[in-house]
Image 1: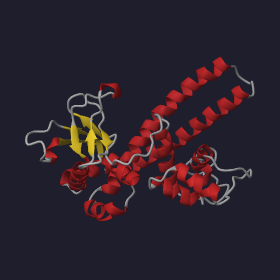
Image 2: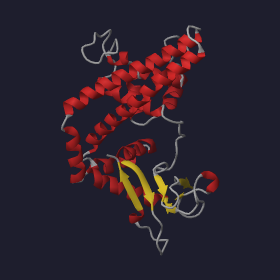
Image 3: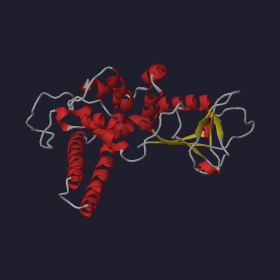
Image 4: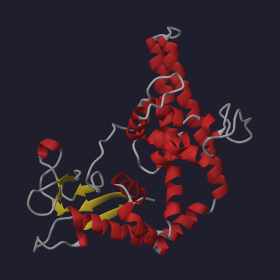
Length: 290
């Protein structure tokens, strides 16, 4: 079940959906209680699931056969770290929410359903951080961005960039393993500090000081792990444009968004030119990752 949960999380499914399913089926934790999002999240990043002990990645004595492979463990740790960087976002219906930016004010565009006519992405009004001066048809924007991403991953330029990343492959993998190991160790130290403060072994001031120090290092390592993870994801996408298009209709919105976010940093929606009712893909200015 943990192996299946890991696969589903990496495919874009939420922890909440898995926890609700397990509790509905009567699946209990080791202590006999119900599953919670935090408990499942913590277990999935434990090194022991990959057969690792004593913070070592290579040459470690295995306490039991691994449940997940090392690469899956690394991806889960990177995903867990990235989710700690900011507030949790609610699942959205619109594909490009969070990626689109207004050309005028730089604010993020949001999906807006309409009872008549096509749905839009719009820049919200000033009370919500926008200027309300930009809008674009949602379906047209989704299709145009997909077309550009497919062309991008199949391009010679993209293949060349991936080849450049692959040059120091052995060094890359070694650096990734070391960083993942140190990040996992730091996260456990932070948990130990919280336990020490809760039990009265250290004062609140000592806890905050140590937490600030360890937390800063953990954040820096999380950024580095995310960078390695992005490079691995770019390698997997190179030359897969046809497959992406063939499987697009079967993907969930979350999976589509994750795929786009691997390749795209953001998309600037430029000013509409007359006639405004005509959609022009040139209005979408994509900023690529890497």
